[in-house]
Length: 310
Image (cartoon, rainbow, N blue to C red; front, side, top):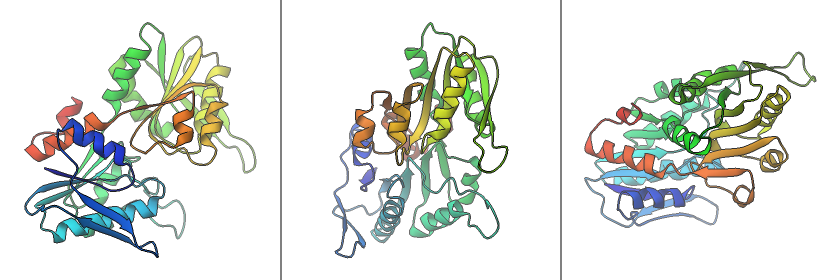
């Protein structure tokens, strides 16, 4: 097994390699003067099972091009199998036509990765399950449910917790965590009555006196989560915390979360944390390196990946 790291999240790649007792394959991923991406592998990888660790987070297009060119370089170097390990799959929110004459960019990106030479994809908490069908190569979609469940059990032991879905679309994900914890589930129903009028947040479920934990896959601007936490507190919740897989946290999201009623936002290191995230008092990170490492080991051994979540 060989592990190649591009530039989006090198600390995560190093942590995965350390977990597997391996060293990262020596490679250069750099830019020419006009910002063209150039990738060069400095070790023999002929006939090897190679894993490229690269999130397509900000800057999404640069990181995506690094991944594509790295796949091409490995294919031309005669790697036996190339697995694109994409902890955060960018463009996943563009999984359907949102209106007339709009793209399905997630499908386009899937085609690009396949054509670049990837034989397999390993990713984490896809925004929409149907994206698995956009690929004509095997895709393993890892779940953070066991990781979040263990952490919640440790941090909230003895407290009366309730899992909350931030919207109707996230119910399946939140129910998975609630089932593992054997606790109740609430849903936040948000709707905009008409253009220019702020969203109305209705809480489905009795959250009064409970420590509520919102579970979601992506936090970007943070507005929905902050409004959801405020709605829970307004409905009598004792506290509101959040567990999210991918901390995109663009724009003023960190400041918005710091000023919100959110007690603690827990994210994973699928996206490299900015300085603002590291310094925030109510944002913390969980490492997904052990989960990725175990999945990669099982792929290399040709053993079951899905049994990780039984």
